[in-house]
Amino acid sequence: MAEAGHTARVFSGIQPSGGLTLGNYLGALKRFVETQDTGGMETIYCIVDMHAITVWQDPDKLTRATRELAAGFIASGIDPRKSVLFNQSQVAAHAQMAWVFNCVARLGWMQRMTQFKDKAGKNSENVSLGLFAYPALMAADILVYHATHVPVGEDQKQHVELTRDIAAKFNNDFGVDFFPLTEPVIEGAATRVMSLRDGTKKMSKSDPSDMSRINLTDDADTIAKKIRKAKTDPEPLPENLGGLEGRPEARNLVNIYAALAETTPEQVIAEHGGQQFGTFKPSLADLAVARLEPISSEMSRLMEDPAEIDRILREGAGRAEAIAAPILRRTYEIVGMVGAGSH
Ligand code: AMP
Ligand code: TRP
Image: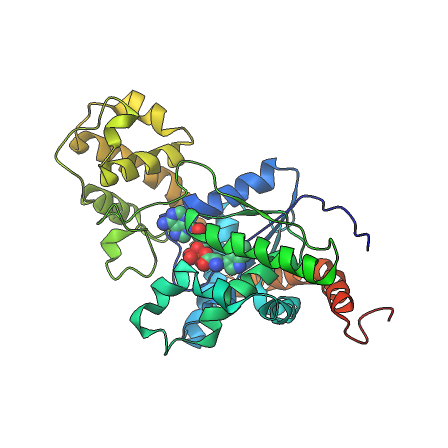
């Protein structure tokens, strides 16, 4: 069965569960904007509210977090005229495609997902079925648009690989060449921003310590204080990159600096090598404030008009739906569902 070749299309998503961190900004948002502005590809960005409810969310907080995340996208530079920006639950095709993929993915594949193992912990009998099935919904998010490229942070690589496995198995089971084998795009100096309190742990919105992360909504004083208090070792910055070996906290601050300054860790070491943290941290704090302050004030401004945010998401959902509907219909037809096509 001949299927059209796959034109390059970008899809990515972020969960509206709590606020945005510097990790989300550098690992995801900032790169989404670069892709939108330079890639020459169609870009689709989604606020994945259905993923968020795999763990219980207070309904009012979910509503607010969804709007705040939309504001974060726009304030970071996503232009809703250039990119398709919407929340997942407004496009039913995600859930419909996810069911088909639940029937393609194998239990053993899902059991290997490290994020599930981390999130479920010792409590795996008691977490929701949705948390376990989450990567199949993520595959549906991506493949219902035939997306070929997915910019994400390092922690999502395994889920994009699973998406490829699902696409390949579907194509093979039905003897078609319908779904593309999507590439994860994990690039830049900050694909894994680490906690400011522990350089071996990912910076995360769910860390109990607020000092471990920089939130996009933090004010200038808070950002400066968190960087000043960030854990480091007593040595000055090394004169070359090799000297960061075994110094996760120092490496993390150098990577953050490089990503914020749009340069490389090599360049940061060339300029700051030999400095004590007492000198380097204030430079990093100034840079972070200069980059993040305009985003956080634009987010607050946008949050004053939730109706406008809702309008933007509704409009984006309409455009997303128009892309997804024929791909879902064709999927149903391939599977043999009556009413889907020309059987
Ligand atoms: P999440 O907040 O888990 O929904 O993640 C949204 C996006 O941000 C995904 O692309 C993640 O890979 C990325 N991300 C989250 N935390 C970090 C981090 N600490 N460093 C780099 N990227 C991150
Ligand atoms: N699972 C991703 C995360 O926790 C969010 C996500 C859902 C996503 N669907 C996606 C990311 C599709 C990229 C593409 O960060």
